[in-house]
Length: 141
Image (cartoon, rainbow, N blue to C red; front, side, top):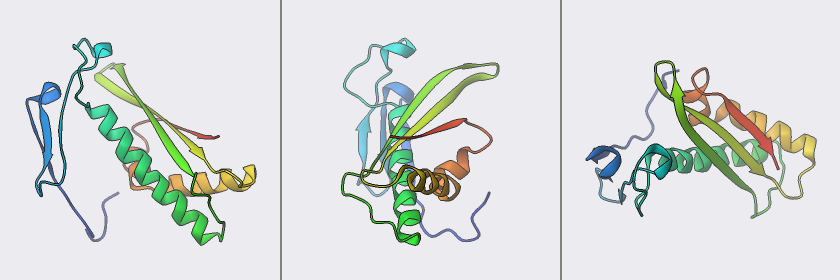
């Protein structure tokens, strides 16, 4: 689904692939990359694309959770959080991703929390981008 109007855009440039570096065009973000041992690499202190994807998805989904809660007049605790677990593995055409989002909504009734999470999954740009491509498991903790 293509946005009707772009409100913000950014760009990142990768050098060296999974054993290189990524940096933003505006210079506000730069990190080294390492291939995880699980993918045959040496590990190391660099990040990897799956971690970066998980970080972005978790932050974006939490924003959507807050929007849905605010719209439904549900107060959220400062301890509200989203943990995104991203896995990578072989598929017929190469490699694919698996995602689980665990949402912690302390003090919110479980049924209300499930409705908030479902609404966030409909609104989150990451969820919209992955829908139909990646199975995303939603867990309310």
